[in-house]
Amino acid sequence: MGKARPRTLVLDSGALIALERGDERVRALFRVAIASERRVVIPAGVLGQVFRGGSRQVALRALLAAPTVDVPPLDRVLAEGAGMLCARSQTSDVIDACVVLHAQREPSLVLTSDGSDLRRLDPELALELV
Image (cartoon, rainbow, N blue to C red; front, side):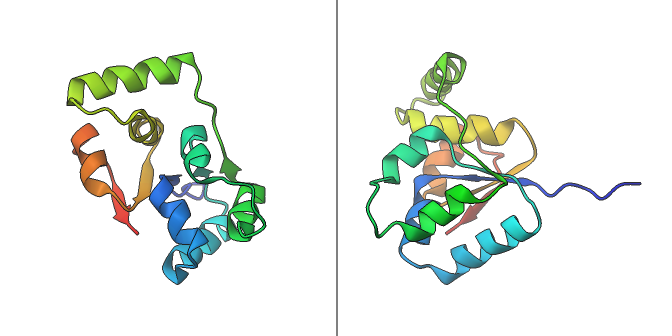
């Protein structure tokens, strides 16, 4: 039997902000994820929330350059799904809804600083608070 593929990490803006602030626990999580070839998903809207292109975003740029990091686009299908999820859960943060939808596509762990908002969208979501 082959080696089981580890769960995908889906990041929200809080995880990327923690990385940028030098949070050693978050940096260690990313080092292990990359070394073990774990897929890391940064939804495009999340990246837009934190990316400023400045020279101080060295850690973020390094993470984005890793071979297992994916930045899927916010296309029409995802946008419509996020809107419907917001309507069902009576919330308004489309980017949070995109994070949840990406996490629902495959076995995933969401790294977040805001678990309560994501739980309103999906109470069963696997979360790790950063």
